[in-house]
Length: 241
Length: 241
Image 1 (cartoon, chains in turn brown, orange):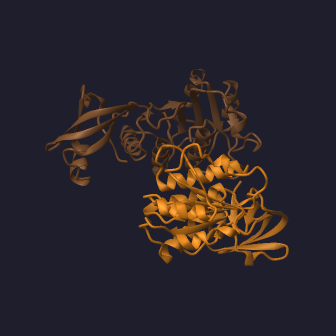
Image 2 (cartoon, helix red, strand yellow):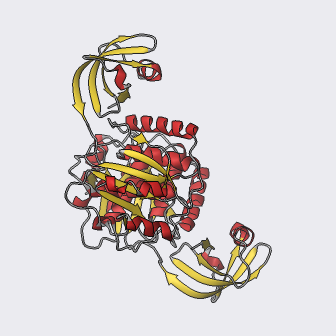
Image 3 (tube, helix red, strand yellow):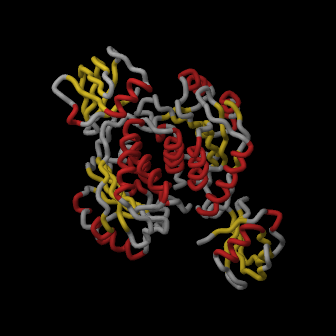
């Protein structure tokens, strides 16, 4: 199954339009023709099953004959609060977290964060998210939130049913399953530190805000590995995978 | 904690030698001096707590005052049978699987595998494994086995207590916890497909060999994401993280 994207504003009552590079991809790379059936998402939880009616230079017009809400999407909404990391490690996290099913990515600055987040980088991350949404056949485009600092993040923890922090110094007996309840939780926050980890004060501070610290084993993981692993385990414990 | 590497042949009765770029790193980058305590592994499950006695141009001599076996290592031995994938995706898998605690990486060729594995690439992967072993403070250097094809792999499944295959078309109710027994398993095989996935015949063939196929959720994961996620979930189910 291939899934294509179009902006919500291009969805009309019983047909939709696809423009720009996505239209080019459908007609020139995938060589779709009128009467072909294609799947399209608006990244806002809607999936449209459509039949191509007209292919023009940069626009495809397709008739909608079926709509689905939240196909292949998670029930719980997981926000990944990720300390900004360097180079292509952040790309990896953005891309893989999107594939796995993250609802929102909240970049944060912690004491040991040394990387930065320019507008240009944020734009690249948004492109990566769009591409990962399509490749994973997701119908929700995760939101990339504005950079905040660690203290600001902790002040938002009340908005979540469950707030978790993967801490490398945590006792290995404090496994994730100790903290994820069996009943439904709808909003979950997962906090991941930078290359150098959290300092002890940050961990104590998190605990004051009710954040649960868990171990991801005795081996030291790089920040991007910790993010992908912790998110995988969390979605698994939530029965979302 | 920093962990350094030296070849087993450099371990003598009560002292060890560190040579080459690792010696340079210790003395010039980390600026260690005689009388400093450093941790060294031979990548064969041994960890040595040592005190530096002499620093010469390209050799460090250190006295061993404590030895530990299998520090931070897994009890179960997990072999990742990974279809060779393209570009830096294979680098990512090699690196992160090593950090997570894999025992052996077995590159395989399946029907839809399009990437190849040259001697030069294998040498790069071995360097990545060494570096990831140190960064994760592991004391076991995973083995990178010779490339084999899918049929040859299936013929080895008898050597394992449990053989698993992450299959994207599998019913999502067939979660990993259905297949990992609560009692101790000592050798586990985890098979991951290429970018295009396994074909149906390969999956049927695996089942004939007793391989258990499990789902990693309804969202389609890239091969490298599937590898890291499935390995994380497996080590988690085995209580190794």
